[in-house]
Length: 362
Ligand SMILES: Cc1ncc(COP(=O)(O)O)c(C=O)c1O
Image (cartoon, rainbow, N blue to C red):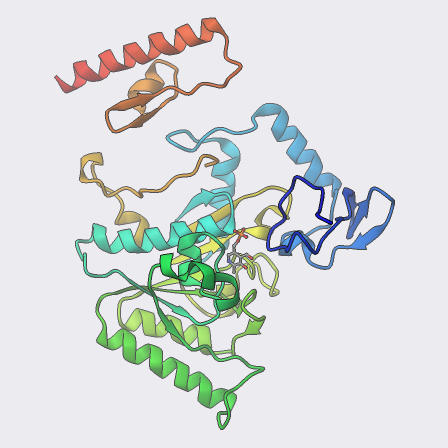
């Protein structure tokens, strides 16, 4: 018999699951289903939850903010909560200058990969395009994230569509190859990385999870490994890109795991526990060196080519309207519940904006 639910559950053989417990509420560390059965949340709802479920302080601030403003795009607008959060994150993360927000860990990793690739392009070094990674890394389920974090059981079906990366073996404290001590194998892995980065100038970035590989087998790196990879990257001018989505924000004991690993990445991403597991949000932070390379006149096309819905230009703002342009196309997509009067205002404002721009560019 087939599951009768309309919901297709992630990574689940739907034929084998006839019925899922229906969770109706959460309380502290417990999830409670419709029949009153309690389940201790041993995976923190996919490693996200920090303070437990239905924590009053968190629920209250979410309600308070929701009553004021639910979502306002970061495409050329800003808002106070996001400014406060970005400042806090950069203060917390040594070396980081700015934050790019997205809505889940996989997209945060897509952002870091694109940022790293475009960094070199912006500097005019167009041959620096290769990404290096570790075997068994996991960075999410979107195509870019799958490409840099190849776990064979998860991704083999999509292999032909993933972009190629250079992968290195990773020391795994629990499974050393025969005849190697942990130290010897760590050195062996580091030497391989050093050799490749030394001989191949087209390597743009090295992407790895910070502190441990989680989904790919729960492998806590030997103490010096990550620090030494960082040093090799610095030696050969390769960007060091860390993924702290599963390991940052306290999961391995420190808020920022790379501090604990004595590292200085160029780009780092956080997700999951960033919101205590209550809202979907991820953040990609970068150093000033990276963010500065994206500055220039708009026409130079150096700005980051990435943006998500849940993340106008100036002339439009003068007329108190907010819209998107796609090249020379102006896109008006107002809320469906907009009134006729507001539609007219929107059209008038758009026309005034077009007039303003044509005056400016004449
Ligand atoms: C290290 C790491 N990076 C990225 C991701 C992807 O995050 P998300 O599932 O929010 O897309 C995960 C998810 O488990 C992860 O463990």
